[in-house]
Structure formats: structure tokens, C-alpha cells
Length: 138
Image (cartoon, rainbow, N blue to C red):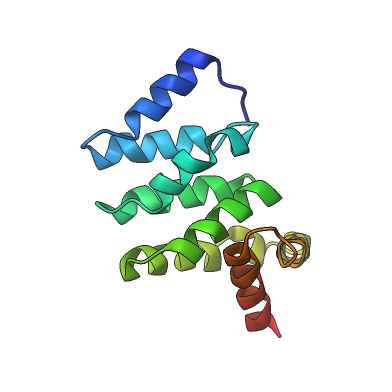
């Protein structure tokens, strides 16, 4: 994860408005590495819920999940809880299902602990999605 200076942050946020899916996807990958993810949470949600291309959704979600932390997982669950487009919801679900931590030993238990922690999140949508994911494991 990297700290952004104001110029880099501004550039990445400006790229979110691009008509090119590849530029928007690159912005999602860059913003997903921000140390203070909460500062760009709204922008990340727009990318995760990109109405024009699920490639943007996929690239942003994968990058957030690769963080391996609670903040990245929370952002993806929040987007999934708000997804109204079936294709976008399916893409987000697929990225969660394909998270490499499910297949790498102890990482799966860490992911389960993160999901358990998110069942107490302040956001009802995040709580519901975390609970849904955990219920599939039982």
C-alpha cells in the first residue's frame, strides 16, 4: 500500500471519469493501494459499481482483495450490497469466490475472521453480505 501525494490522488480520481474502461480500471488498481482507503471509499465504490464495464469492477475488486485486509474486503462487500446490475453483482461475487486466500491454507481462516468481524459493521449492507458469505461456509 502506498501513500499518495495530492497530485497523484487527484490524477487517479480524475481518471475515474475517463471514457476508457482501461483507464478507469487502472485508476481502480491505483486507488485500491491507498493506505487510507477510507479517504477514497466513495470513488472506489463508483469504480466497483461501474455501469459501463465489469472489467473495471473486476480489476478494482481484485486489487482491493489482494490487500488482504479488512478495509479492502469491506469495500467489496459494500459494493456488492449496493449492486443493482446483475452483471456487476455477479462479477463482485465471482471475485470474492475466487479470492486466492480461500485456497492458501491459513489465509482462509484469516478471511473467515475478517468476515466474522464485518458481521458487526456499522453498514447494514456490509453486515448482510458478510453473514451471507459465512452462511455458505456452514
